Image (cartoon, rainbow, N blue to C red; front, side, top):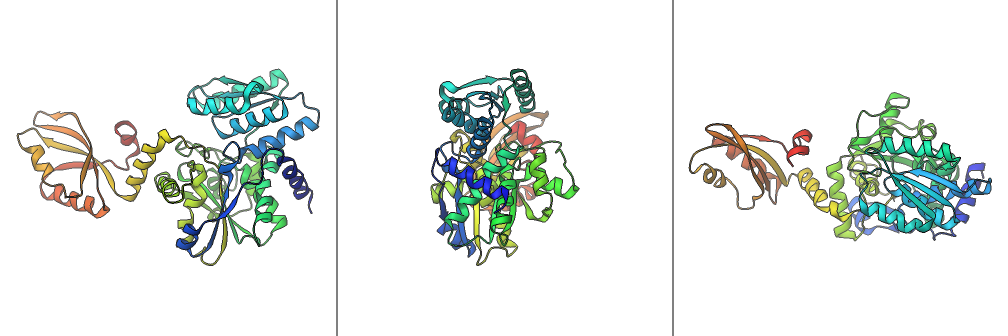
Length: 416
């Protein structure tokens, strides 16, 4: 065994003081769909509903063993904060957790529950970069230990315990492991461990389309910082992958990184919830979502495949947004700005063009664009994408002027 695999084995043994190995479940639904053995590593079933507890615990354990003053600091708006809080309570350590002012109350409350009297939560900064800077400054001033969510060797070692459990739970090593990527700590740990313990296993990485920092770095051959990210996949929307994780991952090919469109990911979240009863957050569904792309490329049939479901901290207040995104991606819902003549019967003329399965889900009179015309925001839901295509043909034939803004991100942000 290498020094790394030996250290991971020690980390896993210590981790059993907190929780048993998370389940690795053969999923019949996905296996039948793709003609493969599809196994789900259920990191959404840790005590904090994500794998982040592993890295936080291991880094804290090793710092305490090395004589740390037992004061730990982190910056996080989600899963890392909860993992650090849980570990602080376990070790009886002091934790100061910096969170953005904009953090939802649900996440603040859960972090407080996990940490109890061991932690203090500091709300500062409108944006995460501001929060991170404040946490790092505080850590230096207090001579405390700053716990990175992914860019630290002991954190990567802790996340690698996922790989060790997979090999212990499977009847034979996997042919393929699909890894979700945010900051890269999980991927760096799992790939490093399996490269030594199961060298025949291949890897595919899944990133959100609006935050593909690993793919960008591999294509450039060096670290890159994305100019902006889509925050929908909040657990993996990272503008720059961690430096240490990238050092471990830089030998992979850009083609091994698949990007999941945020709206398509919403379909996967709803399917896993409605069909399988599995609650996954957007980042937790990444690996399952890109199975579609792997199947299209002929990469799944007959293979033993492990998808790591990295977390299940899903706020059900987001469910309407997820449904909305899923419908738009599936072509079952469109939004139009309609130029409506200001004359009696104009609205009736439009309504007569709707098909029997077309339903008005949104109707908002925006303004008069001219004395004789007005602008209307209208949302249409239907049962088949072909219905909306046919509707647009009828609108064109009837002389209506309209603009399809369904996938116009700027207009959608302000109007939808």
